[in-house]
Amino acid sequence: MIDGRANLQACLDELHERRLRRQPAHIEQATREIVERVAAQGDAAVVEYTRRFDCPTFDAEQMLVQPDEIQAAYDYAPDDWVRAYRRARENVLAYHERQMPRSWLEDFDGMMMGERVRPVDSAGVHVPGFSAPLFATVAMSVEPAKAAGVERICIVTPPRKDGTINPLVLVAAAECGINDIYRCAGAQAVAALAFGTETIEPVAVIVGPGNPYVTAAKRMVYGLVGIDNLAGPSESMIIADGHADPAWVAADLLAQAEHTGDNTVVLATDSEDLARVVEAAVATQAERLARADLIAQSLGEHGMVALVADMPDAARLANELAPEHLQLCVREPLALLQLVENAGAIFLGELATVPLGDYAAGPSHVLPTGGAARFSSGLSVHDFLKRSSLLYATERGFTRLAQDVELLAGAEGLDAHAAAVRLRRMSGFGPVDREES
Image 1: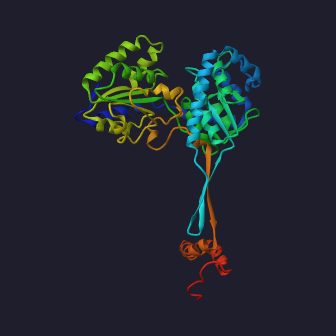
Image 2: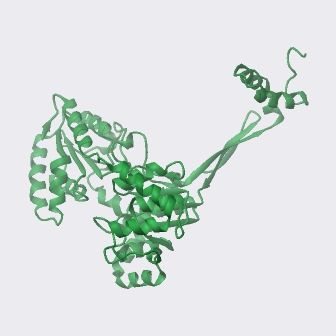
Image 3: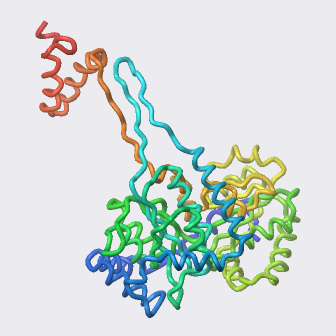
C-alpha cells in the first residue's frame, strides 16, 4: 500500500515507473522484418511465420477457414452458450447503431456547408488467441463495423498447434455474419491485411487487440490503412470509498489481473480500513483461481493500492493514469464522474463490474491502453467511417467571400489561388474590385 494522503505525487511517480517497466524492448526490428517480408512475399511469408509461431505443419491451403469447419464448430458449441452469445452480440450492435452520426448540409449565409458520412469499404479484425479464446472480441470489433455499414469484414485469428481454431471463435464469427476467416495472426496477419497476399485481400482499416508485435505492426502500416488503437496490456483502476464492498472490489481487481501477467490493476481509496480488508480479500480469493500465477505476476509487478486524502485526489490519480477501465465504486458515482477526464471506459457504481462490459453490455471492449485515453477513444462506429466536408457556393455566398479570399491568397503569394476567384468575379459573380470601380 502506498500512502499518498500527504504526497499524491509519490503515487503518480510509482504508477509512471511501473508503466515504463513493462515497455517491450527489441520489438520494432523483429516486427519490421516480418512486415517487409509479408509485403514482398505474400502467402509464403505468412505461412513461414505461422509455422514458426503457431502451427508447425501449416500450409497456404489452410489459411481460409472452410464452411465445414464452421459447421463442426456449431456441433461443438453448447446451445446455451450460443444463445448467450447471440444476446450479447445483439446488445453490442444496438449500442453502436445509436452512435451513428448523420450526414448534414446547412446554409451559412449563402454557403451551403456540411459533412457527408460514409463507411470504409472493408475492415480486418485481429482476434488474438494466445492466452484464451477471445470470442468476445469478435462481436466487440465486428458489430461496430456492421453498424457503420462496412460491406466487407474479415477476421484473422491464430491456429492452435494442430492447425485448428477454437470452435467458439468460429461460431462467434459466423454469428456475426463473417464468412472470411483467416487462420493466421500476429504481425504477419496485420501485414497481410494491409498489403494483401495471394489469399488475403487488403482492407482499408485494421482493428483489434494483440501482443506487442501486433501493436508494432499496426503502427508500421498506419497510413497505408487506418487502425483503431495501439493496444497494450489490459489496465483497470478502481476508485472506492468506505461504503464499497471489499469482497467485490477484490474480485474486480483479480478479474483484470488474470489476462497475461502484465496487467495494471490499481485501487485508489480514501479509506485505510477498506484498503487493508481488500488486500486480505485479494490474497484469499486468488488462492481459488485457475490463473493464480498470472494474477500474482500482475499484482506483484503492476498492482498498487493507493491511499488518497479524498475523492478529488483519487480522480486526479485516475486522470494521470488514464486507465483502460475505470470503476467508480463509490456512494455517488455520478458526482465523482464530473471530476474524471481520462479513461477508456467508465463503470459507474458497484454493480457495474468490468466483465459486464467485457462480454455483453454493449460498448466495445477494445479500448485505449498505456495512457492513450488522454487523447483517444474506444473502438466505435467512428473508426469505420470517413467524413467528407461539403461546400456549395451560391451567388450570395461567393459574393460574400470572394474579395477577402483574393486578398488573403495574394498575401501568401499564391497568385493562382487569387486568380481562380478573380476569374469568376470578373465574369459577373461577386463585388467589383474597389480600384476597378
